[in-house]
Each structure stands twice: as structure tokens, then as C-alpha cells.
Amino acid sequence: MSKSDKFWDKTAEKYSRKPVPDEEKYRQKLSETQEFLSADMHILEFGCGTGTTAIYHSPYVQRIEAIDISENMIEIGRKKAEAAGISNLTFSRATLEEYKADSSSLDAVLGLNVIHLVPNRKELIAEVARILKPGGIFISSTGCLGDSYFRFLRFFIPFLKPLGIVPDIFIFSEAELTTEIKNAGFSIERQWHYGPQNIEVFIIAKKC
Image: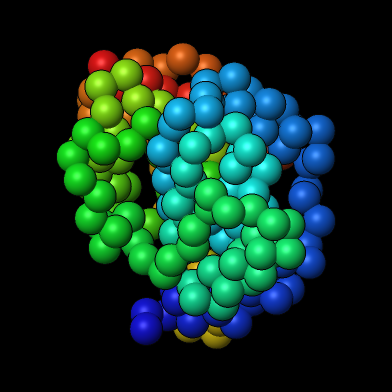
């Protein structure tokens, strides 16, 4: 188990009880995502946390698979889905790379509040492109700290992470992220930001 796994396992219960920071923007993201979903779709959410978003989207698709590096997060998600009587949603502990989906096998992939937590961002986006069907949808919501005063966190993270106070956090700009998504073979369909200094970026991209 990596240090990141341990961090999220330790914080899973607290995370599951934490209210959504901006309920209005969260509902907007759900609504815009569902505009791109249909009843025949097979979709994947990586970094799903405790499964709240996957549960919201499950009535709009044929099948949704949700994965996360934290087994404790996944177990909470399973219990929530079971309590809600949802049968087309499955949870498993895996990274996107470990999941090893077939090429061009998925209609949509969601990566919400997770891309800034992975070290291999370009490889991850390339993997999303590989597993999506032509015309498939990649939906992400990401903290882009590079253009804000939060960029100075890069000097403190190495000292805070060993104490278990923060997980891995990687600093990049919105322009860097959108360029990498386009370079991986996507066109940007929707893009808007919110939060303090507009650091949170919501993107809906289509595989060309």
C-alpha cells in the first residue's frame, strides 16, 4: 500500500461525511455531465471516492464502474449503492492503469477531483484516450493551482505529506491541462472554472 492509499483509507469516513463545498456548482456539473450520457452507455469513473457522483449518474447509463485506490472509500461506496438499491454500479480498488480496460471499450470516462493528485498526468490522459471509443466523452474536474497563490504549496507539500496532513498534490495550470487533453486527441466541448481564484476547472472533452 502506498502512502497515498494510506492517506485516503485513513480519511475515508471523514471524507464521506464532508458536505459538498459548493452545492450549486456541483449540481451544475452533474447536470452538464448528464447531458452527455445515455441509457446504452458503459462508463467508468476513476478516483471515485465514496461513490456519490457515480450513484447520481447510475440511472442515466446502462452500466457504470467506479474505481479508487482506497479500499475504505470503495467499501463505503458499495454500502451506499446497496442501500440505494442500485444494481448497475460496481466498485473495485484499482488505479486507472491497473484497471486495464480494453481499447475503445468505453463510452465515457470520469475523473473528478483527482487529476491533480496523480504524478503521471500525461500518461493518465493518454490511457483515458486509449480506452474510450471514438467520439467518447472524458469529463474532468481538476484543481489547477499553477496560476494562483496556491502554487506556493509546492514548497510545503514535501514537509506536510510525511506527517499525513496532505496527500500528493501536483501543481499545473489550466492552460497546461487543456493543452495535454487536446494533445491526447480530444476536442474541448465545455470548459469553465470556479472556486477561489478560479482554480477548479471543469472540462468535458470528446475523443476525436
